[in-house]
Image (cartoon, rainbow over all chains, first blue to last red; front, side, top):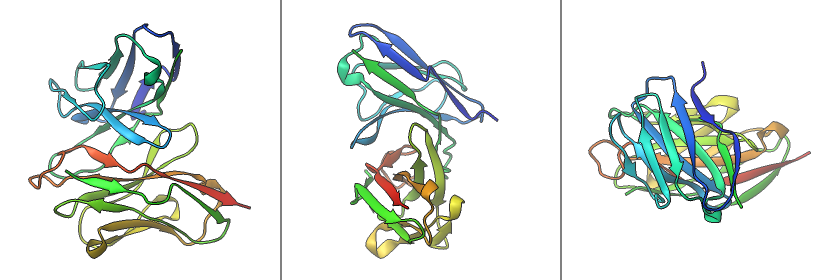
Length: 114
Length: 118
């Protein structure tokens, strides 16, 4: 009963390096999300995918790209990391078909860009 | 679009005391409402949710929340706080299908950090 699995849990990057954060869910949810969490800022939506084959920008998409690989997997890519992207990243999934049951979150990826 | 405010950044209560965390929202209809808890270094866990009907909803870990339409509020309460309740709490709102706003996406408040004194 894994729920939402994120990898890696921790990562340190140098400025300009690239990396991909992986997220997979086993609940057959249609929708998946990437948020970043910064102190005092709450959670801010980076990108989301309402269903397989679609992706849309959220509140803070600059510097990121996403891929909805299939119904289970939704990855977040940083092409050229910047110190401002130091944050904790959360992936979430949900089933929204008129009724919203809330998100199930992964345990997060703590990213430091130096 | 919907929005949510948690007026208190940090609250400290004594163990055994009652707790109320405030959440106010802005939306043109009754939104979906949620409370999440985040322990240090962990992900967010759903405490409770409100869709419709009874305005007092029960959640896990002894928490409850009351929806008040007239005040656009969804405050979280617990009668007796335990040291293990120390965490950060997030209120979130979701738009109703067909009523505008970001369909399917939840908007989160900035969180209230709860400290518990022995």
